[in-house]
Image 1 (cartoon, rainbow, N blue to C red):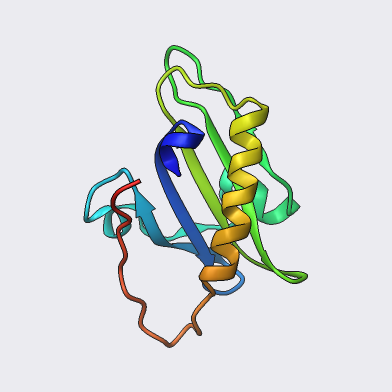
Image 2: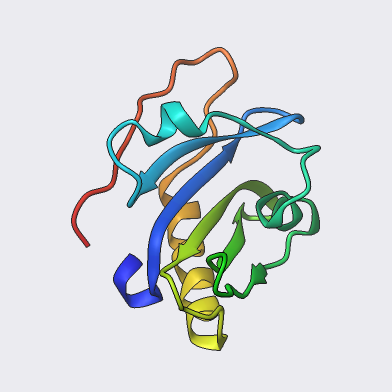
Amino acid sequence: AAGVIGASGMVVWLSSGDQELVPVLTHGYGPHAQDLIGALPLAEENITTRAWHSGQLQWVDGDPQSRGAIAAPLFQGPRRTGVLSVELAEGAKADAVPRALTRILAAQFATAVSPQPAAAPSASLEATGS
């Protein structure tokens, strides 16, 4: 899926309450990425938190100094459960096709993953393959 979108990395973030998102699935960042990334406070200002707060797809195009990114909120029915963040490969733009594919993939992830109760331990997952 990452190759079709043109992504160099992807993170599925799930809500762990009202204050933060936690990474539950990563691809393209190595086996210890979730530990290194850590929780994302919802008070931070970036496209992942904007996708969470707005409930809308967010994106930024890359430039010679930075990569582009796309963030799509995850929903289970009317309930917002997380965000799929996609880091685009160097030189890739967040055009209509990568945005549409990210939306589709986010809808698929939303049906496959769900937030755990705050007290429940979570297993670390690393996506492999394509």
